[in-house]
Image 1: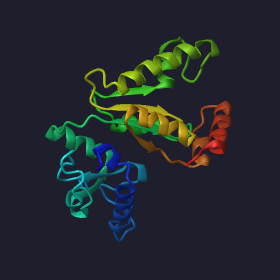
Image 2: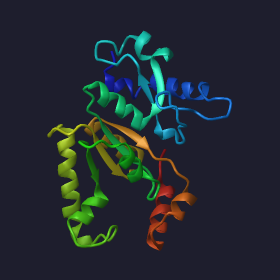
Image 3: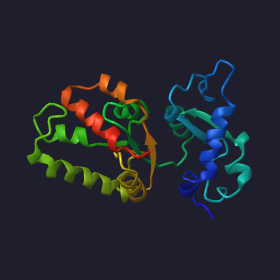
Image 4: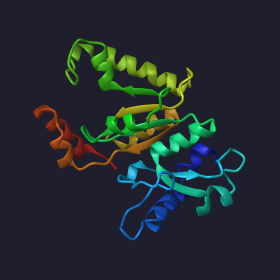
Length: 220
């Protein structure tokens, strides 16, 4: 028997959404959001939405959970708007991961709500010092990661009245990100971007090294 959390990680669900993405591409080669009607440009910005809400009592009923007629492909932001509009009690955690300069922070800024909690270690480094962003003195490392771990524990224990939680990080190693996702009960969102594009967005030469190193060790 599946729970809602295990269902969204199941091969059946992942394969169905991949199939629907291919089947619902229009003649112009574009996939359109079935809520707002605008193109879905990035694969990671497409989410399968159940018209009849998935609940613990119907998650194992394939006529609802795996019924293509009950699933719309929509933007991530549209999905959040739908749930907020109808007051669904959805309190989710997301781990948004990818290479430096891939667009992780931009994705979260475009999708997080007013009452969501966002855990970005780059913001924490900047918050606890007078330094510019990405200037990270080694002497502050223990403090920065201590603050991060405290916030992650709040997400894990669901402490506070936040709506959704967004954790931004690189997580190039599969075991590391899956361990954190399991610990937080979080969904993984990979912000896929090419190495060349990331390098073109790099802030300085040091970041080019970080980007190249990320792609060398990344495990899909």
